[in-house]
Image (cartoon, rainbow, N blue to C red; front, side):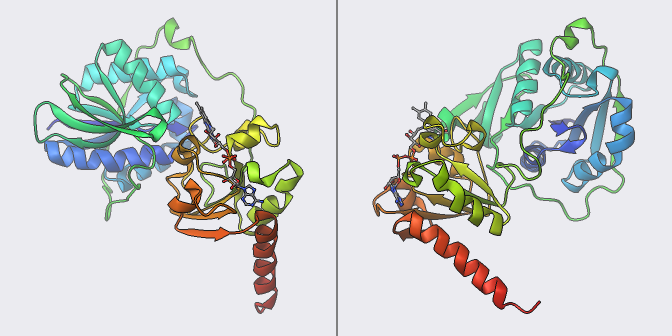
Length: 336
Ligand SMILES: Cc1cc2nc3c(=O)[nH]c(=O)nc-3n(C[C@H](O)[C@H](O)[C@H](O)COP(=O)(O)OP(=O)(O)OC[C@H]3O[C@@H](n4cnc5c(N)ncnc54)[C@H](O)[C@@H]3O)c2cc1C
């Protein structure tokens, strides 16, 4: 039986949310093709010793019938050349029907490496794939999320990345308790060492902007770097993180690491509280994955207001502290 292979993009053994979304999307593709769903995980012996069981369990829970573990000392940490070469080795040996990865930085980079090495076309950031016809019909996101493009794909081996947050990662009932495990040892030459992780500096501890369930963002309407203090307070009360628009980073009020949008971070929180942000398209593409949006703005016609599920038309400098006060008041009233 042919297989749809999904590259599991992981960080030192922790699969990305995008990888589980890609497994979920590829499950439907495998069903349509009558193929099995199989995962590909890359690492060294130590990584598989410490994280192998968890990685296999995550793959099984998301419907994979088999996991192919590519093992090599150069795969101890992420390296685009090493991952690309290992994937090319896998494709040559296993001859899958299609290869899918998450549209994350790593997924996209590793798949671009694979495409270059195999001289095959890669369709990036897919949101839907129909295999009912030949060529396949695919819709993908372009221009930072502001354009949906319909394309056709003719390829001996389709290579796809799945746009982040275009599907929700959904576990299957039961999952394959008896998931098959196959180990392959790619032959990685010196060229696989061209780019390897040597060191890391963690800029953000704990929940990041892209994974936070609550994001309280401020735009030009906040007025100054100091004006973010009430937003910090509200984010802390809600267990969330503070984000911002590019007008804010351009003004030097906050660092680029906090910027939401096309040239910032794409977020998908349970709730996005956008304070004094107009909702320009370049900001919106980073925020549109939010499950709920509350816009606080003095302009009822602002894009962010018209797109939000909830809006307060008022001065954010009054509304944000008032929300924090009300949260504290209600918490104080609760029995210990
Ligand atoms: C190539 C490119 C990439 C870009 N990438 C990004 C990106 O990644 N992220 C991003 O954010 N932008 C990006 N931009 C910039 C984007 O086009 C907008 O200029 C920017 O998002 C505007 O930021 P803003 O909403 O904070 O400011 P503005 O558009 O000036 O909006 C300020 C809002 O605050 C409201 N307001 C003012 N005072 C108050 C108050 N007291 N209380 C409540 N509301 C108030 C106003 O009504 C207004 O709606 C990009 C632009 C380009 C060209």
